[in-house]
Amino acid sequence: MNRLTLQVGWAVCALAILGVTGCRNKTDAGEVASVRLINAVPDAGGLDVSVNGRRVWKRATFRSSTGYQSVASGTYPVTLDAAGLGTTLLTQSLAFDKGRNYTLLALGQAEGRRAKVQILPDEQPAPLAAGKASVRLVNASPGTAVDLVVNTIVGVKSVGYGRRSEPLVLSGGDYELQLAAAGTARMLVEPVHLSLAPGRRYTLIAMGKPGSRQSLSLEAYPDK
Image (tube, rainbow, N blue to C red; front, side):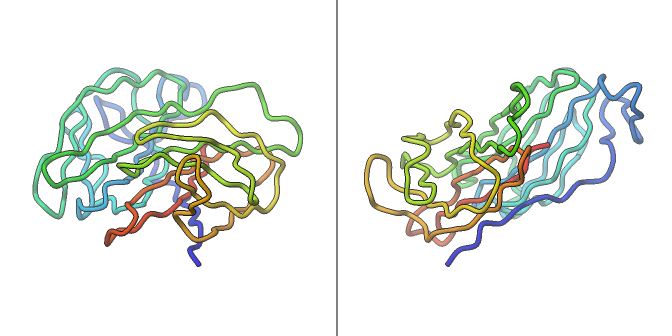
């Protein structure tokens, strides 16, 4: 049985980007964005990521999360390198607004430079009701749309590749989760288990590919 891995890992304080160095104090915390990288590229051999020409994450492995780090607000070129291949996969400009939290999701394949980065602003809704938690499903598995099955009931329907679902609000507690091929009863992974803490939000990511060496899995990452 697969286990659903909670990737927490709070990273070192503050990125050095465009003169932003050291830890921010509470008075100027609103001038920066909080950013994390999640690597859903199975064949990259780890990812090196540079922002505005400066290396900020090195050899982030498949399925790993860097944890949130502070970045000066603004628009910067972000470069993604496949550490195992010595190949630059892409360079693109990404915008970060002050006071916001972001997930950078690297997905696709390093082979043929078919990788890309999606910038996913974390959820900013009204506070959750007492005892409630929220999950969103992202499909980073190419070639198939998926349903999220929660305790044998379809909770999220037909999330296509590269898409993110709307939030699903659940009571805090223990759940058994599965991925199914969209609109069918065909399960794609073994049941996995997740304990939802009341008041917390989570990003669930389907990554890998059925029948491949990096087989399909469902990973959970607590949001900030």
